[in-house]
Amino acid sequence: MRDADTGTASPTTASTTTAIRGSSLLLVGRLLAIAAGIVVQVLVVRHLSQEAFGAFAYCISVTTFLTIFVSLGMEQTMSRFTAIYDERGQHDRLAGALLFYIAVVLVISGVTVVVVVLGRDQLAGTVIHDRTSAELLAVMVLLAPLQALDTLSSTLFAVHGRPDAIFWRRYVITPVLRIGVVMVMLAMDASVIVLGVGYVVAAGVGLLVYAPQVWRLLRQHGVIARGLRPVLPAGELLRFTGTAVVADLLAIVLFASDAIIVGWISGAAGVAVLQATQPLASGNLVIFYALIPVFLPAASRLFASGAPGRAQELYATCSVWIAVFTFPVAALTIGCASTVTETLFGERYAAAGPVLCTMAVGQYLLAVFGLSGLTLKAHGVLRNLAVASVVVTVVNVAGNILLVERLGPLGAAIGTTAAITLLTIVRCLVVRHDLGVWPIDRRLCRGLLRILALGTVVATPNLLFEPSLAADVAIVAAASMALLWSSRRDLRVLDVFPEAGRLRLLRVLLQAR
Image (cartoon, rainbow, N blue to C red):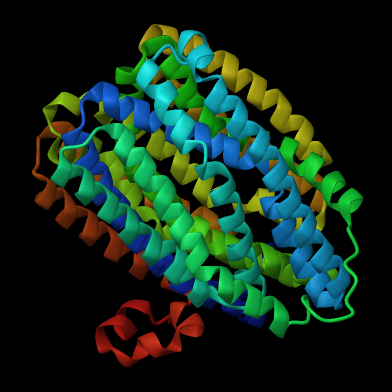
């Protein structure tokens, strides 16, 4: 491993090793969840008409935005401050922060649910232009508070070193429940409304199953105790959240506005083409999202303890790991997009192939460079990022509207990927300006050059011929092994996971020499 600035060899710090190892279980969970999500997506897409699936995908996008709205975007604020309060032993402030978050979610979600349910007729005639989408949204709006509370429970488990609980709750129980819902829908030959109701029930059941564990965890760590008087740090939380939400505004818009804009201009069928391959494109974010629950608390603790050098090493190492280990997904979803799309979803979704390729490029960039925004959050330095995000967000929305009017769903994909590219450049410049650190070190540059070369090797056969999915998988597997071997000195996998060296093949492949 090499220093972020000089490129000289340096040992893997304990905090970096802990973060990567702690996220490994979450990574396995995300892989299982992605696999289950793809199974669910394929079954749903093939069973429903394009209009019905488009309505479902539209509602998923809206509830994603509403989940952030009902919590005022405090998810990562809670991750940062629960870690800081716990590190400082401020259990009264931690208890107050939890009560404040829950109260905000319940109040805002209550108002939101009433507005959506009572105003569905008005929504169908103005914003949505589709009766089925409006009726389905009146059901699926309940996902917003359930998902916001689920995020809080995951934050508490991550801060207190319980990735196993996150693994079982989020990546095993929820996907299994959703697969069960889809199987019931197929067996009954039911409508998309039944699918929406099933998703809400699955989310509620999953939350109830783990509520007792959350209660016991808080009691064990003294957050719930007799005589403890919670102190509501509302001002501190809201001040940070206000800046953080603005800083995250583009990310929020990126993941929620595409389907809304396409639904408004092109209708439910256009949303279906845009969203059919979304789980595949999102596969590029698996490792990135697996690291977030442990990276942000770890970086926040290093900030609180006054160890900026170790925080920088944590960021640089995690970025290299994301770039290398996300390559197989990126190669399949970018270089082999058309083959993957038509094999899984059929020829009626052939138009989704270019959409998948374009979206996957943006998702990969977001994964590799996404930790820069989290690093700024851990240090509480967000003003410049917030201003830049507002500007990029306005450009993104205006650009997407113009592009969707001309190119349909592909226009939304192009606009979103362009915005992600611009956001990546801005984040790197802000990190350099505000923290004095250039986030792209020599290890990452070397890795990206290898990835570009091997990605070209994967894409070339798909441009010249029409290989089968099996052939593409074989080519990607060989390229991934070559990337892993050529990056072994930068990754130093055996330093983080020494047990992997027990297998001779892995020892030969991964040993840094």
